[in-house]
Image (cartoon, rainbow, N blue to C red; front, side, top):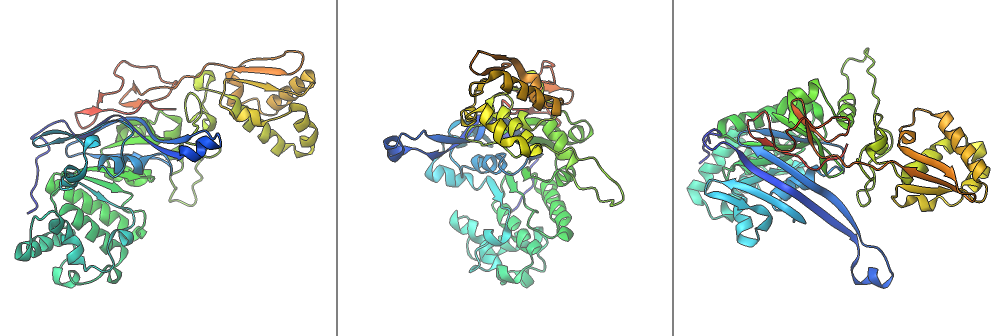
Length: 450
């Protein structure tokens, strides 16, 4: 039977992470050692501290590849953590999800459930809707027979698939996308969980039903006392649905705070860019976009210092400039001045050595004066290029040009007004990670980048 919980009965977080890391190895093992290959690891999550309060909707927002889905799956034990802790504050006391295995992990499914992005893939096509929705009760040996049917009917009615007789014996292929997602939600709530992780639950649905599904989830939150981790790339839906928003970039949280504060006064340059990317419904109104340049960097070798600095229009000297950034600037110059490419490419020498992330670089092949002149020309073409703020020295050693960059800072989350932001543009106001958020508890983030 579905019952309503009172989120205020046990104040504090329902689930939280402490320095959570999830890494995936790309290459390695015996064969890699034979051929002398360096093992590469993708830091899908890199030191994330976050707390979901009881009765709260916390949104995780970011581009594809930022680590949102990995975090959601890790909270449910679907992805093993490399380091750090995940703590679920169950009614009978704290339980460390990151240490659970086997039967204990399966038992966790009665308290933490997930709503997946694609309802068609989430439902077994050979099961009727009643069978699919009731399957968790069968797996956990909670109900059977008349009790099973009663609870399935109750769950279907809760999500708006009524009259039940019309939907119970149908197969997923007989339902629309919105109806299938309602069935997925019914299956998620039938075990009466405390937490739902919703991984882009409306992105595969028609625009006409998206708001209805979000309203259904809000109604279930109010009726059952649920807590949501809402994963999305859509800030517009997050504004409607979430109490707080955490912005993720390259496996870290770069800004976190109340939804109203994030929209009214975004601090991190990445948050500002995401807000500017929201479509404007009025076709007669022109909105400046100022989107981040380039693509998300390689997560196996993220940028030094702040991970967002290569794409940031507000970057300063201490953001972490490096040799790879210099190569990008040179290649952008040759895109604009392609006629000069052959002579200038020969002048600067081997650029592959710039691919190692270092705070120094060597350019030139025997004529440092001409190389210095080339760099002056590149700088004059685009004096607003943020890279030049990070150049500490640029001089000839008689054979080549030696370039050194300012020491970069990898900023942790620090208090800035009503939010926490990981950006060197904002001095720490003293609260730091673990400051009190809109829900009255701890809002923690990662040692972020930005």
